[in-house]
Image (cartoon, rainbow, N blue to C red; front, side, top):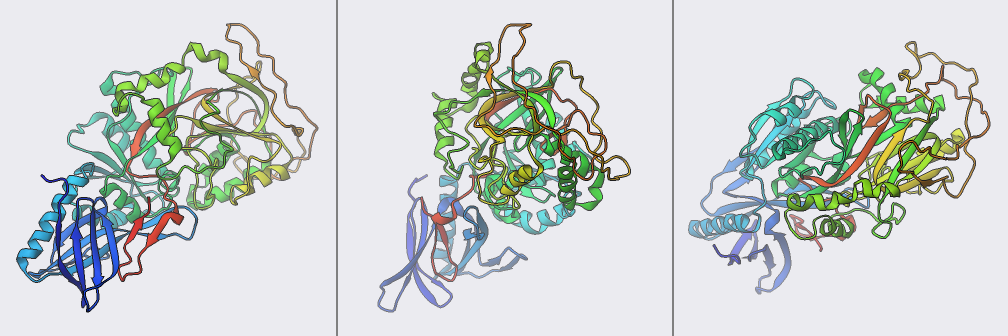
Length: 583
């Protein structure tokens, strides 16, 4: 088959005459005036053509077909701004072309379809789709069947659809059933459904590779099948952070054209082995308390997070802990460099070359990256000890509509590192300022009680002599308010934390400087303060307080391309407003 297909002819769009040209990589049509002079051109990359149909065809909002001998319809990706600096909304563009004869129409449809196969070889042909009918506003089925399924049918993608009826059904299916023939897995739901797919695919891949997930030093095998996310949940953080918008049609179009975005994953271990995987947030203290409180108010829907956040803030708690982390190379990137991980990110591209230096097959050389995570690197661990409002680890910006820049605005999706955020105990108004900055463009790390470090691994433990206590639910069963005072540790301002290298030898004690301060009046609603918090791992409460977390570079791939820069889009002023990303 030719690699540079060409076809050129005169076509009509409505009453206007155009010259249409198909090269190997682009399909262009140029309006002509009465003197046959060029006016304006619309150019669509062949890779972004969704489908070609004979006749006058409409797909959304409802499918309709008018079979005519001299008309063909081309469907393609159109882009429009969402009003913010980052993230583009994708819609289904449609143009109907009229030609002088049926023979010419058949030539156009044949050549366009052949070009799609030649220049879009990574498009999925068969997908396994899981729908969570209970997530978010319980519209998962409607979203899939009314918006997504028609697009998959147009693109010639066959789907096996499973509507889940219990928790972890999707995970168990991926671990146990035959997946032969499926190019990828699609979840219609929120972050909880995505987590099920993530655990199922990673677990299945390690089973097939004969690897033990419970060993924190094992070199996990990257997953070959892609994951697609159709947002339909209470929280869609992963979708927002990897696409830039929460829109089912946009996500479906990314799946159809076969976009591929590698994604780092954190494995979380306790003494007995693997606990969970995380991609967006591993949080202790404030974020753990908010999740625990919100579980008591699930009847409130998404509003429970706002309510619980307010209640936990008013409780004014901090927790003692020891944090150890393995720093990443500061010469490669920094969480304070004010860069954004956008589509075509140079940091992530260089990381791919660094993680897999001699092969395009990530799996064959994956272990080369993790030779650094061994006993030889133990001397590089840095230790801090004190009282923390929250301890957070994220492998992505964790942006969302309420926090457009996220927990760590300069975090990268696929550089093999995570960002560790330490918020030391401080005055309630100071912590409120930290939280508020997540909703604005102000630097939330530019505060004296906040630190951020780019890391490869993190350990968290309780101070020596402090027994781990069972977590007490916030506010008690009655939800009553207690106005008594309690002890409060206030962190003094500083330019940096008390740090030292962790000793490697067994039995050696770590000498750290404990953060201490003065008592302060408690908030309005705390009763007895719990000694320990819980870990929030992508919306799930972990059963253990003392954990080890390690970042696995580019362990999975999504049907996405990262957040597109809205300033880089040029839209033509034609009726169809064909949009092309300027690269």
